[in-house]
Image 1 (spheres, one colour):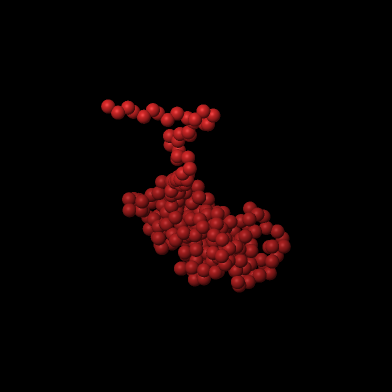
Image 2 (image 1 turned 120 degrees about the vertical axis):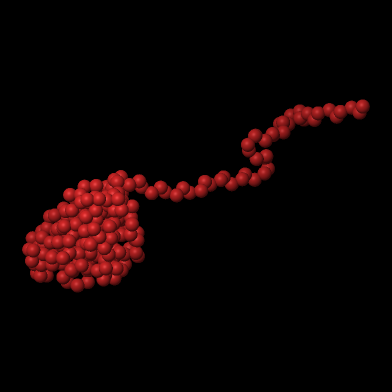
Length: 232
C-alpha cells in the first residue's frame, strides 16, 4: 500500500493560511450586496367608530338615511357614522337642508366655504367630499376649487365671503372691526355673516367627526397635503 503524503505544515516564520469564517465569503472574493427587504404597504387606519349599514337600518334611522339621500344624493360614510346617534344625524340633515333650501348663499359659495374649512382642519375626507360636490354638482372648475382651499375667489362677492370665513376658522371666531367693515362694504349683511359662520361651524363639526372616527374615504381622494401644483 503506497504511503500517504505528509500534511503540509506552515513555513516557520510565516502566518498560518487564513481560513474563511463560516457565513462570510472566502478571502479575495467580492462581498455580496446586502439584501434589501421589500417595502411594506402601509396599513389603512382602522375605523374608530361603527358605520351603520343603510340596508339594515330600521325605524328612525332608516327614515334619516332616506332624508340624507334626499339632501345629499347619497348616504356617505360620514352619515353612516353619525347614525350611531340618530339625534345628531337628524340635526345635521335638518341644518344642511335648511341652509341649502332657504339660505341666501348659492351652492358654489357654500362649497367654497366647505373646501376652505376642510383644508384648514386638514380633513382629507371632507376635502374629498366637497371637491367632488363642488366640481360635479355646484359648477366650480378645478382651479376655483383649489383657490377656495386657500381662501381665494375670483368675484368680489365670493372673495368677501371667503375672507370672512377664513378669519372665523383661522382665528377661532375672532373677527376684527376692519374685516367686518370690509365685509359690509362688499355687500354682506349681518344675516349673511351669521349664515357664513353657520357654514363654518357645520364644516368644523364634520371635519372633526370624520377625523376622529377615521372614516373610510368613499369619494375620489383629495389630500390636504397636495402641493401647490395640485392646487394651482
